Image (cartoon, rainbow over all chains, first blue to last red; front, side):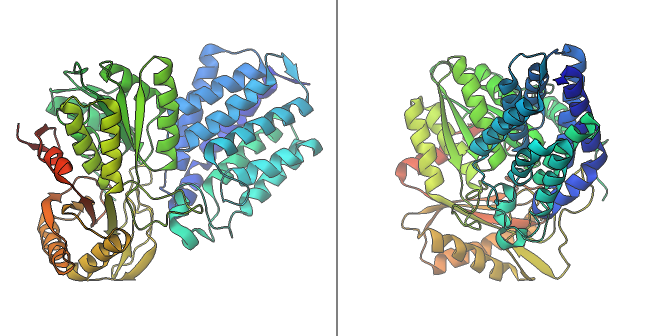
Length: 199
Length: 330
């Protein structure tokens, strides 16, 4: 079973890796976007960490709902609403249970990813976060480590794609040959799950 | 790259504090990042709220004042503001006549303004929205996020602002805003890449002898790179790109807009070439504005925006306006 501590570890691990990888995310965004993805995500997860400490939510659902709300209120850009919706929808789907199973988390995360796809209008293959998140959710049945691998492979697989959504889409064919920054940060979020589980 | 800043993290807050000191006629809330006309809400008038990433000054905060915006919400540099800012701004400026959101067409801006509209409507505020998407450099298809909002934003904010100041109702102000957007097209070029405070180095590599055609205003590269062209050649290219997309049957407003690092001397010279091309193409110019209005930090380059106007739009364009960035007639 996954308790509230697991979800705190997940968020903390993601915040730490976003902090560590901020420059790389910004560099990727500089190639096909506007060079701020790393600093925006860093600011968002700092706010999430502070809010979790201050408000101390006690259930997995409440932790993700609060984290999502903080991201919406602090990140801006497209990433704020999209990551915020991902965590809020996932948290909402978990309800107010004190502990959840891995299967319940997988199902809730799928609802979160669907929320992202509806809000952003992106489908797999559009060179967005969805390209890391969908394979990760599909692989969750095989464990967190498998999901991490799937997300990382999904992010890498965005390199040859032409962007159809978001700011990179303005580049047309010139977006080909670059890894999508949103898919890359999504892979960090999924890697945080594996880290929290010790896998 | 040297910058006149303290640290990258505080550039937006520092600029807002400076703006508050320079413009006592505005209420600048540095903490919540909302710039509001001090006399808002104005009884009986529709209020206009816009916003977007910082780095495009004077857009949007410099266009707050009588005859234009009621409030503006600056985000981080090149990052759209968060929903809380627009919801707060709407609550501060709504007189009961409703609020028009003016949103540049970028995925982030659209999502955050949509979320803000929901928050404001929950508070009983009537919200309408005009999306600005005038950049002909982007193919408007299912395979892009749609055309970007650039120079036409100034025309929409000025003309819809004048309609609101006349006391026209929300549906009408919204319709006028849409008409301005639909009648406007822009095209921009960059002679140098932009440097954001967060990154500290140019966001893309543009060799000395080349220019980018069809750039946006966020440091994103354009659609095409060519060997450097003369002002006259650039004017031919930009105006043709616009007129191929929107044949001008009516007189036009012309905005020759600097991207931030191009001197006015060059902008006026470029305007002379733009006017020449318009003359050759048989387009009547009603009014011309030259200057740095919708900028992209320290990028060198310029954009051209044309807006076809009928008598009503021209009258509203000429109506008095008093903001830090645009002022005439009052």
